[in-house]
Length: 238
Image (cartoon, rainbow, N blue to C red; front, side, top):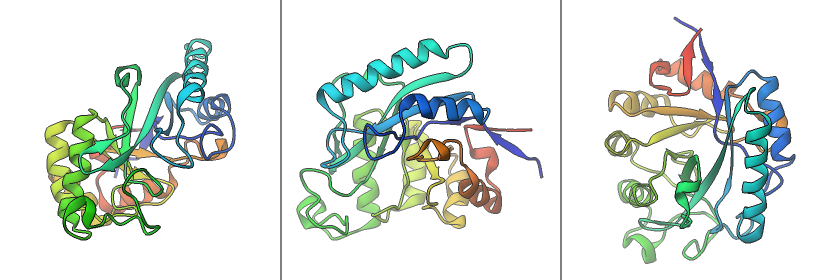
């Protein structure tokens, strides 16, 4: 079996949200690990505790723009955003969505206005039915389509979704499903189903420290065991 190298990390966090280290630290770590592209993708403003908003978000975007210019001859630096699903088909997508090079969307705890208990399970007030994986997938997909997301982060984390259905829809929408290397949320069978649906995968570190930027060990192991490397869009044979 061919070996593969992951060449980009589009899901990283810094001290602007709930990480440690600066955007510059993440960029330098990515260069040190031989990556070709990195995105700083902090949580959108809808997250109560980790959301980046207002002047803080403006400072972050300015800093990323400066890093993009400084390191243009060494690595591609993108400004990303990890949006939060804020209701069925809704998210905290900003009006200037076009200003972001990478838009990720995912379900998270502690998000306004509907996430009313710590388990992170959508209640009857949102879906009309309790924790139905198919309806959960429909709600996230509708939000992803509305904000023209590039990636859905960590499917199944906090909230079980119908992965084969999500994969089929993501193929049609051109959205990638993430294999999260901080904690793999997709089973071997689900990874195979995603590939069979013709949907692309993307590996992200979800790094919260510079030391974890480019750490793809867990995701790589899962992808290898499922035999789906050829579906991973940010990897190539070496």
